[in-house]
Image (cartoon, rainbow, N blue to C red; front, side, top):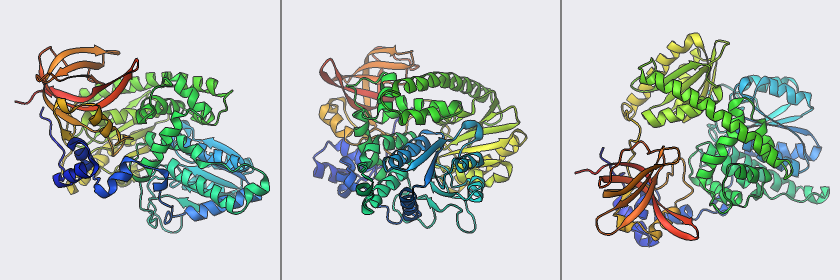
Length: 581
């Protein structure tokens, strides 16, 4: 395997290094991400002052105005969230703000068995509870049947969503559709998660009510929207939206809020997940510790326990965190089962492993974990993956994850006659299909993906586990010090569209190597023959067979760790291979 460097404008990288006074490798990492001298300050030090006003965000002003009227009139408001972390945190943001403003509020979240999104049953339940207005979070754009049920009961609906808007004639049936993907939306950033949109709505609601002298007249303390930023960071990171622009600002501020452990439910969940109080909170804390636990109840059936945790007080929080911890253990077992069966079937050459996509379906699979399995298949094969759990009712419920820039929503739209239901966006989507349509669906999706690739960059490159994307910059081991690690750390928060910097180091000597944890991780000491030596950890690289004295090339991120009061620089290995000649 030969590692490569990502192409970059070298002149721009030099300008960044000169202007910022940073190591050339740090400057190259910025340039690879498209950051120029003018944008560097805002990227490296994101602040809430950098958030742009929601001018041009279609449906926004109508939604806020309708919410203000509902609060002032004392109308009962229903809040509904989808069952993933983005949906649950969005519902928690709106519910928290509405209740702080004195609104009578009912809240519910989707149940896996009822399918994703806003269901007719949920619409009817809110109407039965006396709601005059419903706000859907992370769903509702395509849920026309449920919107019709609400309208038939005289209930208006505001939709806050970031999923693809289907082509349709006429006006959307909601009273307001707040969705940056609307054709008439001119807000400059289209990549916000629903929780970010909900935060914008909640903040504008507070401000509008202040203008109405609502808090002075009602005697209520004015809520501070910044108290909700921990929820915003959770939903944004968990939903894998690009950590750029508004998402980067909101996540950065939200991580700082999360680190204070002010919200009782999240403080209890961090304790349950064994996240030490002196440990920094970053996006991986969310991705590896919090999001799996918050998603677990929804993956097993109903996500209400996750919402209840986010809204819990200090007395309720520990018990509710324990419920999620138990659900997460059961989720792991279900996920491992699906992964093992899907991997075995694909390894045996079962139908579905085509040149351009991976397609797996099976009975007895938990529908709530197929999305995670699809993501792992994308990592393994480098191709779009569709994973479908077949139920005893003859219906399959599946999830898809993308690769190579394939637009999943567009691909499924071409196969719509074969599907009972589908929704999502370009990178991740859900679908419902009858079992007798699976073969036809596999063929239709294969043709759709092949068509997209033919019109774009050609066939998806097949790759196996461990194959690396290009590195951002090349350095010598002697360059890896605390200063460089700190400069690279300023590119955080890391995540979708802003991965941790990947540095290429060539010709290092293995001075020590051992498996750690459950054997799936690799601990190494590496030297360069010039007296420089660094320790490193490779998560998921435990299967690599290293011997003392081996020469290797590595792709790694320098990090600063603290142990017993001592700071040290280590390499977090993304990949390694025998040194190129």
